Amino acid sequence: MELKLYNTLTRQKELFEPLNPAKVKLYTCGPTVYNYAHIGNLRTYVFEDLLRRILEFNGYQVNHVMNITDVGHLTSDADEGEDKMLKGAKREKKTVWEIAEFYTQAFLEDMDRLNMLKPHIKPKATDHIETMINQIKQLEENGSTYTAGGNVYFDTSKLDDYGKLAQLDKQELQAGARIEVDKNKKNPHDFVLWFTKSKFLEQEMQWDSPWGQGYPGWHIECSAMAQKYLGEQMDIHCGGIDHISVHHTNELAQAEGSTNIKPWVKFWMHGNFLVLKNKEKMAKSGENFLTLQGLSDKCYDPLDYRYFCLQSHYRKELRFDWEGMNAAKTGLRRLREKVCALNTTEKTPVSAIPQSHVDKFEAAINDDLNLPEALAETWGLIDDPNISDANKLATIKEFDKVLGLKLNEKTDFCIPESIQSLIIDRNNARKEKDWGKSDKLRDQIQEAGFIVKDGTCGTEVQPK
Image 1 (cartoon, rainbow, N blue to C red):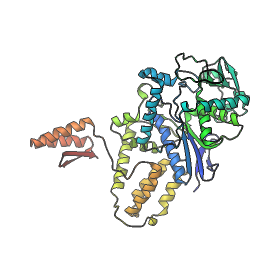
Image 2 (image 1 turned 135 degrees about the horizontal axis):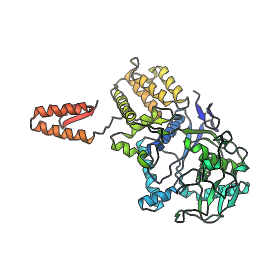
Image 3 (image 1 turned 30 degrees about the vertical axis):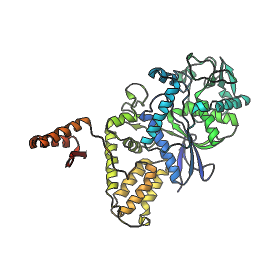
Image 4 (image 1 turned 180 degrees about the horizontal axis):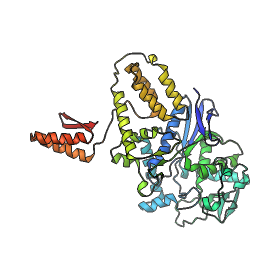
């Protein structure tokens, strides 16, 4: 079945045909490890995980590379603001190296909790400084750089098609409106490849280079490491939509400017924002900073959040609210319960499955990752009375290779402390044979949304 993906470069869905018919080279922008990833960040990584799973479901062998940004770069895509790694070190009174190691591991643990497939290669920026220096040298040899104020800049005027990914030629952008004006720049969109003169005098992460001791600009790390591990061309490059206008635009300029080979990337794919009720996107500051652990503390399984993400298309804004999370939690629990209730002792051959369900599922996922439709088809399969339980289970397991919801595992749920207190009180009342109080507490627990069962270990509950 044909796979069609939306290409940000062309702003349309296109038939996916990789450079190598059987293999796919995939690069996804990884985290800057100065703090925990918030759930808005994680929505992008869920989308990228689904993309990889769908590619593999279609029979492709995927080589997945995701960078770990553990070298300081500025809090803005436009070479301005405060150094992120330094910010984290000041916040926690640690070295930048300690911050990087701690939050790298925290991010990888979040990936595990969300049942994401790990990238095959996870290069750290600090391990590839020489690779970045070599790419800057190539750009220098090609006449695409200049030095000003002690820093090395990329000269965007050297590329006739600079900004094609963001379609900058179709936008009325002024330097002052987009970025902090840098007096050293020849052109408004020029950007730093290597810093030797930084406004951060206490910068810990510095390396020797042909241009002096300093550190790389942010954009150079992804283009340099992607080319090191995937070659001069790749099939798909992913990230959040906030990367389109600056970071990915500059990556593209560096890669094609250093090799003169086009296109560097066949398909650019971007996930949309997770937004709050006031349309504000989630950020790592203030009350909007909600982590996966924060959801767990409120009794949500990490896969409840994955299910929540599956209910919206990756290119659409996804509004976060607790009502939606509650609905996702209930939906995943009920789907798992239906799967667990299937009679697995049946011996009906899998070949007896009506092909229509499989075809509809594949058509959905191959239509630019239409996971809401694929999820609906999964429910359609489980509720179809004309399919045996054995065939349902076999097909669900295949579907779950894409969904990643661990549908054949029993549901674990978290009991709020308030309910736990009621359970303790009820157990005590039953021991004292105060049946009136016991019944009253049972009613309170049921009204809170739990089914009450009296087992050998006392009061047991599960969500309704």
